Image (cartoon, rainbow, N blue to C red; front, side, top):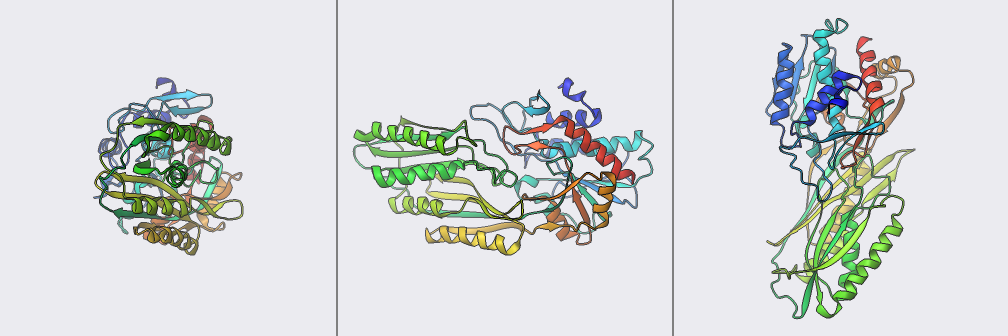
Length: 473
């Protein structure tokens, strides 16, 4: 930790190390919130906290620019890692030219942005170049679970009309647009079937070792979706081996590509060995199909005790058919970027008789977002599911000739302008503040939302220097 805290810029890295030692998964932000508030008030700046947990630090009566980042992180860990995100400190390490955590997400998304803002709050009192510059600092809560904090911002809270979002993930790139999104939940209730076929035996199927990743930033990389792959095998085994489905669970968060899935099936006892051999065949098949993107893929099976009940055959068929028909991945491409996509994020069945599938649709265009969501909705409605929509927000765009964009280009003429296929809070904030000019920048972060998350050390220094330059203009 000390080695990381001594990296340049030292204040940013010191604050990032401090943040990493405090629990801050979405929904568990009290400790980090208090740390941010205490830091700002120690420098005698006006510090406000709203009911949603958003924090606003104001360093002058007429601030010109607001810096913004979310202070929650995605809690993902490798299979078999013992780690409690609600209390355990992250274990940071340097790997080559990057910083990573051991076995878990790093929280550079958006912890580096938060650390940079805290470093600037410190600099207001220690660096004369910033002493007279009125700024606002907005720390938003629970971005990773539907941008809950940003959605509840008061329209009269922020005084600035220029905002720099610090949640982009490629240094040297100025983000001028992001995709809108909508959350979808398909659910179905039923009565479990206690009549298990006589002579059946139970088999546990486990699909592990996938890379996962951010459902926006990584959706075009051809990575496997554990829920979709598991469903593919389940449908095959039901059709050809008289299998019955006891349970099906895979994935976690809406904005993470599923890395693991498990299912319990029953089959006639005399063909258990044949079914396990079939799993081995599919393991080889999947590894061949995803040899470039999923080198760690593993699909295994083993005999387990018989479940107390099974999913009724007609419900089982409706569930598997709906998931099979549901689109997952890139829907349409723009010119060099992903335009519209969907992510089947989580599948869960319960012993009480309920099936739930969580999905997210993203798009740079409202009509294509509607069309993709409608196609997914149709697949599940045909299977008898209830489909609910929530947390919808539109895309965000700022024109190249906007004053804020031109100011950024003066600070760094080598910036490349781009749009990102993920849900930056810029889209929500512009709905609340229509006259707000927003740009988005950040360091280079790889594999956010997965335990392979890392941040390039050199990019943090370049990102910091850009912030210094644009604030001095």
